[in-house]
Image (cartoon, rainbow, N blue to C red):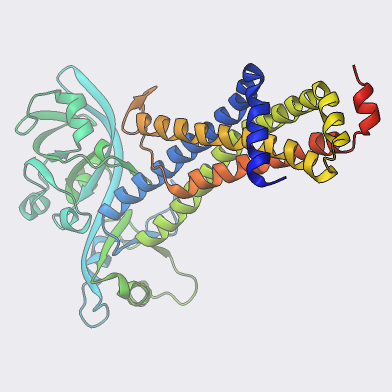
Length: 407
């Protein structure tokens, strides 16, 4: 039998029982649609978070003290950050911005929230690529005079002031009154935290007014030093320069009392995590594909039983074992492939509908790619072929005389 005859015969056989064929298709449709939509959500989340982190700058290093426990004294100071701008020891470093982090209750009128308070210097705006939507950022004068001023993240500003302009308004942080001088543009959440939920204050104000953790040398302790490198190609060189500079300053002869991580490492770790998560979602959705394959096998077994006399007649008229096998395998494959195509269309439509929509308080961003669709279709066809072989072999092995006697 020619391939054309096999396919037309298979289509005619499937069309003879439309309800049964439709039910068999449904399992594959749901499975493929679930795989494509869930993996698109995972891929979209990965791209969204990666883009947000890259927007902060890929040429960043983060220097943090090794001892981060609640009773541990920090080993990094503001002076350490200033020393990283030495053109002789660290020529690859363009800028640095230390930060002091704490948290507290923030009250404005009748509204209140719990927020992360970050003490920063003016350089923080450029090193971390922040943009002010209204007002102004922290200034050098405010750092020197320890002014009680604050720059609000967009989320905090909306929570405390709603649609009012916060600039010029006052609020209380941990019982102290601060004046709002600026509001940041929305940045969204990243692996580094919810940037829109932060409040930035002068680093000296954060240290002397809101927290007072000192180093073993008695200087102003910082939780991190953000370091901007002249280019991505200089990252490895910059890490060596920062390491050498701090080891000399801290007189270290053994293990370092600080750690250095890069933005690229953060992105790579996040990508691996998101890929694992997307595969996990796809594997769960793939279970429905497996169930759909079992449905196809069940339908084909019923079809073989119902068409026993037909099989006997065909064999009596000269049909070979191979012809019967190919006929039933082609029916199973057409079922799964047809369901796969319909499921792919449905999955893409669902992914497009979910893109940018807020569902159950969660904003979904999806990314449909051709490799996901092709993979789902290939798996669907393979499942149909796999689960169709046994019924097809059973049909091909029927003895023609016994098949003709079947009632």
